[in-house]
Image 1: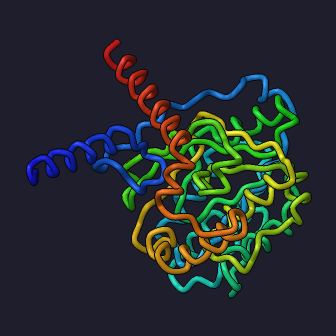
Image 2: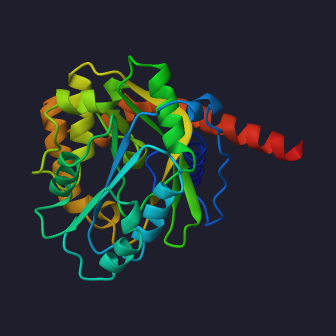
Amino acid sequence: MFGLKIIMGRLEVSIMQVLRPGVGQLGTYSPRPVSLRLVQPNTQLRGQVLPRISIVVPSFNQGRFIGKTLRSIIDQQYPNLELIVVDGGSTDNTLCVIKQYEAHLAWWVSEPDSGQAAAINKGFIRSTGDIMAWINSDDLVAPGAFYQVADYLIKHPETQVVYGDRILINEECLEIGRWILPRHSNRVLKWVDFVPQETLYWTRKAWNLVGAQLDEKLRFAMDWDFLLRLSEKQINIQHLPIFLGLFRVHQNQKTSSQMSSIGQQEIQMIQRRELGYVPTMLQLILNTLLYLLSARFREVGLMFDMNRNVSA
């Protein structure tokens, strides 16, 4: 009987390994060079006036990474870009790095603030773009992302918010995982936030409809709260099946250092607000299972296509 339990336990682990997608995990394989096939933007875009994209980069003591973040934004070579950096008074080499890119910035400031949400709001007050996003100072924008977002929103004016798939990278910019997502689900969004923040873009109209600000009381889950407020306004949110951002996993980031403390408190607060209670792990699994299975199905399909193209 004991041996049977061991076998069943191992079988359960094997099934979970097969079924569970990379979504929700902070890395699923050993570091490797980033493999990213660029989807070329519509060439017709280059001949027209493109919507202005306003990017706010909130920063605090990320001098090690912020240069790569800014370079990934500038290297988009998007002709109508408004780039704003809001630093919280860094004491490392952040300011030296920012000054290296000052010619590409519409505005920047370094002064104490009350947190990341306050810094982002401060930046967006200065912004004028038709399309908006914030990119944290340790993450990267995937090549071609701005053209992809602009192309989709031009062709689909009924859509106000888009996001894409994510590549996870480590401190050395090596790939350690991927979030390959299925179609967007407002129902799943009430249970858990699987939307990669660094891939999220929205219109000025959507921003104004939800009060033109993030909730500054939140330090961890401000993006989930923002998405839920967008959803409540019946704003059209779409997932684009392309990689739009690279999320860096490192020890000093909030996702790694604050998830079990501040992060968990804010997550439970939002769950109580949206669901009326804090769900158990089993309830979360049952209510997101089809979504995660769809993610796994798409993940396996992309792996199959990649292997087929390599063998061809």
